[in-house]
Amino acid sequence: MNSVFEALKPYLDRMMALKAALVLFEWDDATLAPEKAGELTEKVIGTLSGEYFGAVNNETVKELAEKCAGEEGLSEAEAGQVRELLEEISKLDAIPQKEYQEFSQLTAGAVRIWTKAKADNDFDAFAPTLEKVIDFQKRFAAYRAKEGQKKYDVMLNDFEPGFSMELLDEFFGVIKKEIVPLLKAVQESKVEIPNDFLTGDFTDEQQEEIGRFIAEYVGFDFSKGVMAVSAHPFTTNLHNRDVRITTHYGKNLDSSLFSIIHETGHALYELGVRDDLTQTLVGEGASMGMHESQSRFFENILGRNRSFWVPVYAKLQKAFPDNLGNISLDDFVRAVNKATPGFIRTEADELTYSLHVLIRYELEKDLIEGDLQVKDLPEAWADKYEEYLGIRPENVREGVLQDIHWSQGSFGYFPSYALGSAFGAQMYAYMKKEMDVDKLLEEGKISVIRDYLKEHIHQYGKLKKSREILKEMTGEDFHAQYYVDYLKEKYGELYRLNV
Image (tube, rainbow, N blue to C red; front, side, top):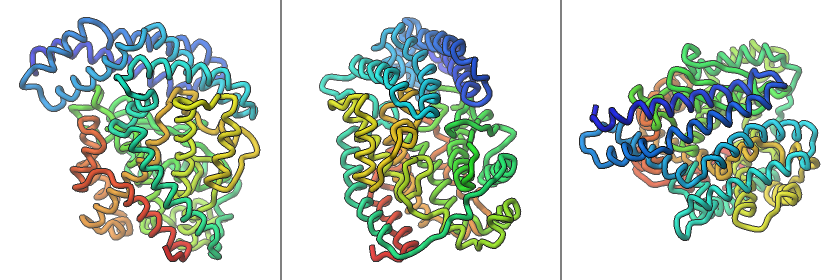
């Protein structure tokens, strides 16, 4: 180990320990913590956030990081950690520590306020908190912006480096041009796809049993991870030997089933990070978009593929005989691919999903760079749903309050969901040239696909940017047309369209 990096390493280890503590508190708060714990837990999270800020943003660490940056002989992992540390220092150095700590405490409490406001269908109860969150984020972005850089571009770069408003406007322009008319054609199609059998009084225990089976089948290692229940499914990790996923249970069987496959896709990414990278600043996914490419690849491109269910559908029928016993595999697959505009993003079908993201992207831009006010969000939200999906939410619970992200301060995150879907479609187009994906799935050899993704994506953690990974894997930079072609082919066949 390089001697300068060796001197830096104890400071890096402290940073990661503090991040791990924050992850554990946030995991506990979302899954097992008692209702009354929140206020005091917020203080702990605020204090730990302040400690993390100080661990990164101090003169000794800055000096060592800058010395390391000029050193020769660093390993790939060491050089990656130094690069990430310098980026983190640059980010935090621009923000006053007191404000950073206040913001961390604010968002810890904001999630709780959002949860109650959503349950009560009361946007006014959340609006003042949301205004504070947005004010902090705009201030932080202004502190950090380079000359001439827009505040929203700063926020976007945190989640998807290399994708500015200019590139995203182009991407979402393609979505509007191609997918909105495709959805209209689907709606005008005479093809009927029954899916009522996916709804029923399924017990939590039934859904958990099949959920654990499917997670393990896809590749989740329960000796290195756990599955729990939360209001909003998510994945988090401490390192590649402790990765945690959540789901939720309700009356729609496909909701919990596919959220588990989705979160397992995230988990596989974290479980696949190399041992020399895990528990370091580069020991996580390359970007949120690349992470979503994996979760949505497993959930949709594989999980909604007929071939995926050939080896395991009988197990699903046995678990839910009253609903699925007499339903053929073909009818089941058609049902879980049915396209119907709805209000809830996390329940959206594969065709309409990116339109949900488009709406959030446009609203975020207007909130950060335009003149949209928080008080006007419910109406603006409803207007865009009517414009792009042809439906109008009747209340804020199924409208502007449905997502947790803004309460967490995650502005700039939503575009990653659509980019991830598009990244996955581009990878899939290339992979089909490399292997017979359908045959592998039919034979239950999903591990071959999983290992391929680990080799080309997962193992590298944050050593590579998303566009670099795409270029090395497929030979091309990001190209949205693969996503459009994938959706046109899939839904053209399903609904017998001439597209």
